[in-house]
Length: 274
Image 1 (cartoon, helix red, strand yellow):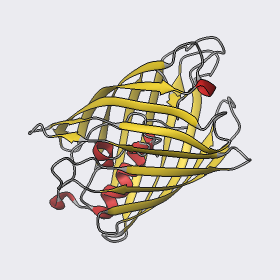
Image 2: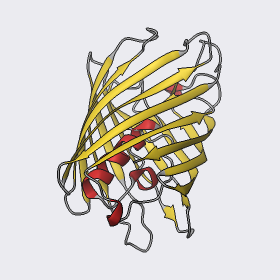
Image 3: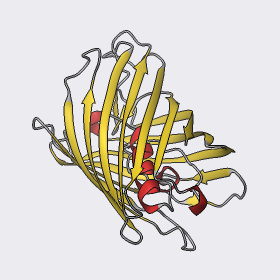
Image 4: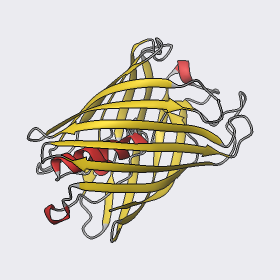
C-alpha cells in the first residue's frame, strides 16, 4: 500500500533499464512506489552515462505527515488521523542489458498510533522493466502484507508505462499504471504528469499532477482522487539526496474520512544509491 514508495520503485526500474531517466523526478507512477502509486515521488537527479552500473542498491526513509495509499488514509483510528509515520525502504536493481532490468525490494510503513500498531505494513515486490526507445513499460508484482495483522495480505500485478520527453521544450514525463488485485479487490488505474522546472546545480523542482480511478470495484465510485503538488530535491553527491514537498489531495466522496475534501500532505525524506 505504497504512496511514496511506488515512484521510487519505478524510478529504479527505469534508471536501471534505460540508463537515462529517473522517474522519481519525472514520473508520477506511483514512487510502485511507490505510487509507488504516485503520491509523493521525490525529485532526484538523473544519472549520467558514466554512472551506469549493472546493479544498483538504493535505500532511504520518507516521513509524510500522514499515510495515504491511493487516496485512502491508513494512519486512522476510526475517528481521526493519529500518530507519526516513517517509511523506510530498500531496493536492488539489476540491469541485464540497456533494455531489460529487474528490481526487487521491500517498502515498509511504521506508525506510532495505537490503532494501526508499530509495524503496520511491509510490501515485497519484484518488477521487470523494459526500455523501448523513449517508452519504459514495466510489470510489477507486489505482496502487500501487515506484520501486525492490521490487514490481510493482498497481491497485485501492475502494468505501467512512462514516456521520456526530457528533450522537449516543456517536458511533462507522462506515465500510467493499471493494477489488478487478488481476492476480488478490484482494478485500479492512475495517470499523471510531472513537469520538471530547470533550476541548475544540485537542486531539482517538479510539479506532480495525477489522478486515481477505479476501473472495477476498487473504490465505491469511479473517481478516487486528484493530486497536485510541488517537490524539491537536492543532490548531495556520493549517492545521497534529500527531498521534500507538499501535495494537495482532492478526495472522492467514497474515500473521504471526514467532511474535508482537500487534504494537504507535506513530506520530507532522504535516500542513498550505490
